[in-house]
Length: 220
Image (cartoon, rainbow, N blue to C red; front, side):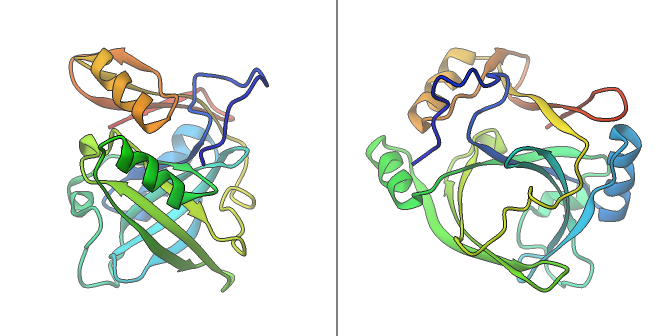
């Protein structure tokens, strides 16, 4: 199901199965410029999500990890996915994904744990080179406003977006904050996700990205 950290000594400041993080903003070009200004690496246009009203740009964050800058697509009349993007005038963490090679098994495991989900649902988009990406996504009905991840299984014929996204940045920390960290750690344990949680004034996602410039922090 979810990849295991095993005994490789991998950095535990980032969940081992983290696939990508979504950084929301109301204008994609401005989001690309702001991320480049802060990190020193320019994300490239990834494509649009037909019927969902969004478009994205991508930046590699390490092996099988990437940053997705997501914003409304002005060529689509309706913003179905993440309507809150219209109010995000500064880049803000929106939600995140973990990868699996058996999403049906994950759906069963979460159902057995009493966690309500939607999906798996099929998704696709065309890359700028015309090649199609395909995936299945499984979402929690209550994701705590994006604090809890969704699960993604990439199609066997799809190139993972991290492979050819611009390199130069690395995700060096990704964790959560909550006024009740023990409760939230318990939820992550039920999900099978190794997410670090610290005490904070409110629920929050936090990421630190290292690049050619000084490390930069983003939060929800």
